Image (cartoon, rainbow, N blue to C red):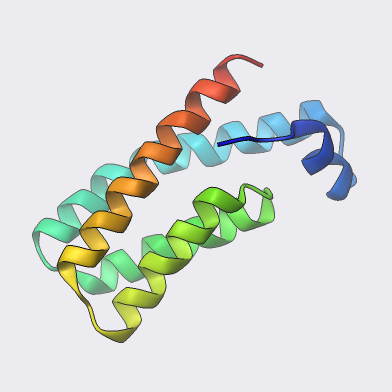
Length: 109
């Protein structure tokens, strides 16, 4: 995963420092969302999965973190269409992996 903080903040017309603060808040929220998604998957609670994945899709789309927003969108669309738990679980694992990469990248800033 690559994240261009300068380009992302410039397209949003905000300073890099402000962008990073907003991104830190999104990361903190996602750190709470990941275990909630995991619980919802175990319980087949597709309503919760849909709600959280919708928020994640929007948060990371707004921050121009397209790798994460694309996977969150795929989770969201799958939950709304056929609710294939195996597919959603695979997408969730991909999301978690990308999110861990993002956390490492941000820590290096």
